[in-house]
Image (cartoon, rainbow, N blue to C red; front, top):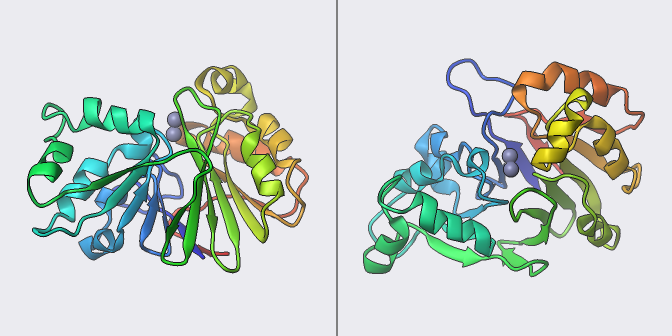
Amino acid sequence: MKVEFLPSTVGTPATKQFCISAVVNDTIAIDAGSIGLLWPVEKQLQIRHVFLSHSHLDHIASLPLFLDNVYRLGPDCPAVYACEATIKCLREDVFNDRLWPDFIRLSEEESPFLQLQTLKPEVPVKLHGLTVTPIPLNHIVPTMGFILQDAESTVAVVSDTSPTHRIWEVLAATKNLRAVILDCSFPNSHRWLADKSGHLCPELFADEIQRLPESVHVIAYHLKPCFFSEIEHELKAIRRDNLEIGVTGREYVF
Ligand SMILES: [Zn+2]
Ligand SMILES: [Zn+2]
């Protein structure tokens, strides 16, 4: 399974993500922070399935642009998967003709821009040899983590979240767990903000990963760029092999 964390900057490539998105096997996006900015546009055209963890802007910012960029006349269009609360937000707050044309209504009347699919907790979606299982996390709006499985490996994307429980239970019973990509948004000095906004800081992150076998590769994700060095320093102090900070633009193969 190939996973790439997408860059979200203009100009010099950066290691930090301002907007959140990852692409799996070139065709499946986990969040849509910057998929609509990918160049060449053929890279956008390859993405046929978009899973949204939740409705926050850093995860959906470029979705309207992406759908516009890949639109073609005909019945073929990308599928967008999200929980009920996120779909409600897309309908009422994004595709409402004010912020952006109502692609959802237009998709019912003309050649579709997108096909919306509602995710139910723990109900897997099967696509091209990959199974994606959404598991509710613990954030300030309804949010799904994703367990990605192919014949050889299992990888979990666990963001955005504060301390959580169910996904660790499910992963404990899952075969071939290779990697967990986990929220670590704030430094320990801002634990108050992590608590209030539903995120992790390194000391909370360390508690969460204690539930994972040592062999599992842990990748810190969703680091706020303005605190990057402080979080990096604190993550280095966690004694664990196989722990690293996710690097944008690098292809991870699990
Ligand atoms: Zn969020
Ligand atoms: Zn976020």
